[in-house]
Image (cartoon, rainbow, N blue to C red; front, side, top):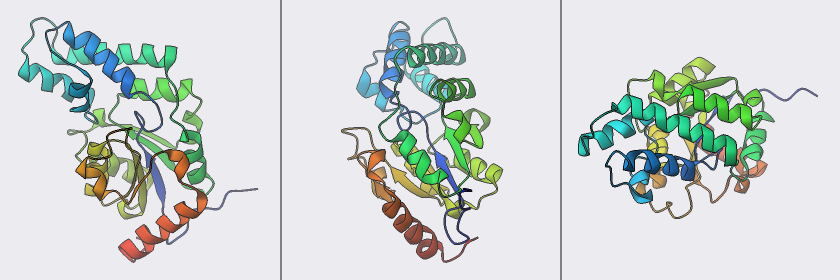
Length: 239
């Protein structure tokens, strides 16, 4: 049986963040960043890592280098080392977030084209999705490494929507980070936020159209209601 196509008055595409949303990878990023940056003289801890959550890795290393001018490798070289380490950790002990496949299926069942729009580099996106056999679900993979600015700038989402041929106001973004929510709303997109445990107090989550404790909390009825509310009521147009 062929899945129905997108409703002419509903969502036209669904765009997923990856780290912290589909993958339980925040702790892996913390481990890699602390391991590598502390050796360079940056007094980093998990709280410090959270302060740069959602940023492109090159922006993270530039941020810390501006405060702690280490000698030796450039911020760009350190970023490569961090990504190498995250990939190794992901392949050895990474896990999917609960409900990742469920959320993908909710969108796929409605015939929506799916994209990953991530602050991670392409090589990490591809390695992760291949490892968890998720790549086949996505029509598009887009990284902020192709953009001049990372999240909270909306560029990564706007480019993904353009490549999918979907109007931004008919796109649904799934995010876990405050910077990602800000980027989605700046792009005029609907946004479902799934904050990491203990991070839901951030004011950016107040801008999301729905805030969930888990991806498992969104069911078919809730999805359809959000579609009616965010697209039909929110924009009044299918375009």
